[in-house]
Picture (cartoon, rainbow, N blue to C red):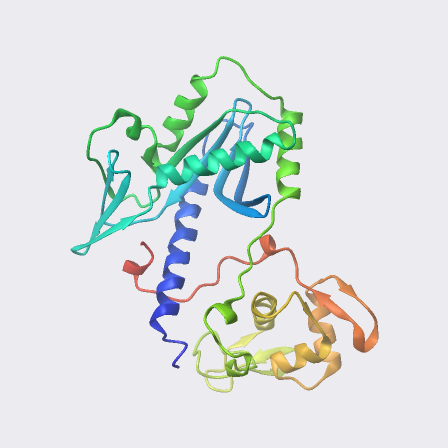
Length: 315
């Protein structure tokens, strides 16, 4: 319980969840945009000479590239274009953050430099988007440029059309867009942090077995090809999948039959084999040396979350 209710864990998790939910809101808005010839890449992470940079959302359009820097803040936001400060007032508390417009401009320079290494030169525009519809945005100096750079997600369509109208002709055709899309994805390097090391947690403190998703305090047992909770009688045929995926994220990108048995707290090698096989994981080696490999991180389910109060899903 010391770690389960750790305030630092919950604060960090709340921050990451807020970012994820904010990006999902923008995804929905983009999905309804009338322009069909746009390739979209989420959470793109590239390397410039051993220095990584990450873009929340990148649009590859016939006219240009558009970087979307997405923020999911609550309360009242103020942008000071003279001091280059981003100020939030929420629940009577004042916080100052890095300038998101400068962040987006830095990503633009990084991306332009990366493209140059492939002899490509395309115009790049940026938008900073507040994904929380209840957030007020104040432009302290009433700088007209800020109105076109720091926007609400509801106005994304308007601003994209404004940007596209600034180009008199299309710069690339559909085939070139597709090639660039594939090139960027082929160089994408997902970030998988070592959470145990970051939070200084010994692996010995982690408990093996499958926690019941309903009552959360009991461990499920494998019986008749199902996981059953002895307390609330909840059953599941897939409860092991999330536990195995979590193992890949927390420990290493491979798992053996023995490691799977220890993880799920089961004794049968046959059962572990069938569970791993049915997850359709790629494997290497044979017999006791056989290893099952983690799937691409982009295929992990994104609908699993720790319940948090509604006021904690915005920063």
